[in-house]
Image 1 (cartoon, each protein chain N blue to C red):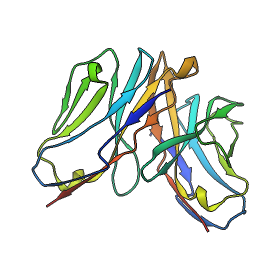
Image 2: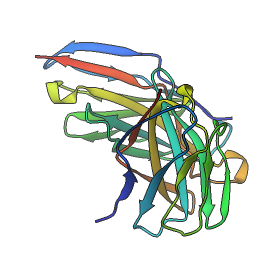
Image 3: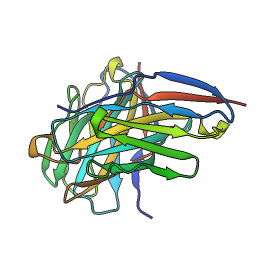
Length: 118
Length: 114
């Protein structure tokens, strides 16, 4: 079975602080995909990144960076110099072969509510 | 523009009154699914469909039905809604090709059952 754990329920920071959102996953599959989504107050889900299990290179996109470590089954997300517009719920998700049926299903973590204060 | 369209965005209904939430995608994707989002639980899959006339249960299917008569449409049916089905619902359409998944989500439907 697949499982994703985001242990931080809520994080509160002041603007310009760096913040890291943790994500730990479980799967028996050797091939899988990891995702991060942002859900702003308006409610839609915004895709941020996809990473496959064979690519452990860290990725940076502007103020966002992701650290993927297979050894610890973690896929953490860091926002550098946070801004008020970063306030949202962030979800980590896993897609695996689920016993051969499909990679289509996403297993989500519980979400982390990030509040950035001015 | 590639998109997944859900309707309605907001719905308040009474216990027991049948309702349907529609979902349509214009990307010719074979895989579609429904999720519900609840505080502290993230998103959980309700039902999914791998192609026309092929549907199966996800993690929380009780109280829901789906159908897939056309590739583009995947409606979610609540035959007799109950208050515990008050939630935020998302339809997703996925391109699943050689194991690569790209999921596109609708805007969400906020359902309240009183």
